[in-house]
Length: 203
Image 1 (cartoon, helix red, strand yellow):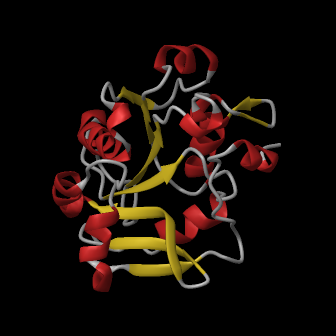
Image 2 (cartoon, helix red, strand yellow):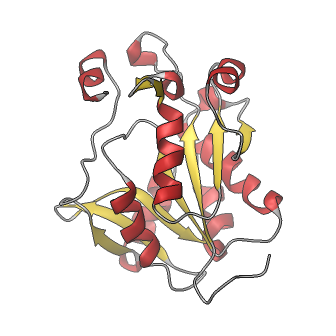
C-alpha cells in the first residue's frame, strides 16, 4: 500500500470478544450506546482519531454481533478461543493486520468497553507515532491506560507475550522505559463497563 504522505500508516484494532461475565453474560460488543451496539462506537472513535482502517476481533455471540452491528467497512476476525481471555484476542487481531493489503506502520489497540475514551485521545496517541518501532500509551494523571499504539516491529513479540486475560500487560511492563506516555486525562475518561453498575455510563 503506497502511503499518500509522509505520515505513518496507522490502523485501529478493537478487542470486542468478551462475554460480559459480570454483566450476566451480555456480550460487551452488543451493549447499547446512543441506540447502537457499543462496538460501532469503538470503531467510529478509532476512525475519527486518525486510523486509516479498523480491525475488529469478535468472540462471544459473534454471529449475533455481525447481524446487529454495522461493521461493513471493518476487517472482522472471530476469535474462537475468546474464553481464554484478552490475550488470545490480541493475538488474533495482530495476526489479521497483514491481511488487508500492505503492512501498516503501527496499530492502535482499544477495548470495546471503554466508551469514555474518544477520538481526541486516539488522535494524540496516533500523533506520537514516528517510527515502526514506537510504543505509545495514553495516560491518565500519569498512569498508563488505553489506547496503546504498537509499532509494527513489535507485533510479533507482543503476540508472543499475550496470554490469559493480561493482553499486552506483561510486554508493556517489560518495556516500560520505551513507552511514550501521552496524557489524555483532560480529554477522556478511562472507565470500563464491567458490572451492572457501570452501565449508567452508557447513553
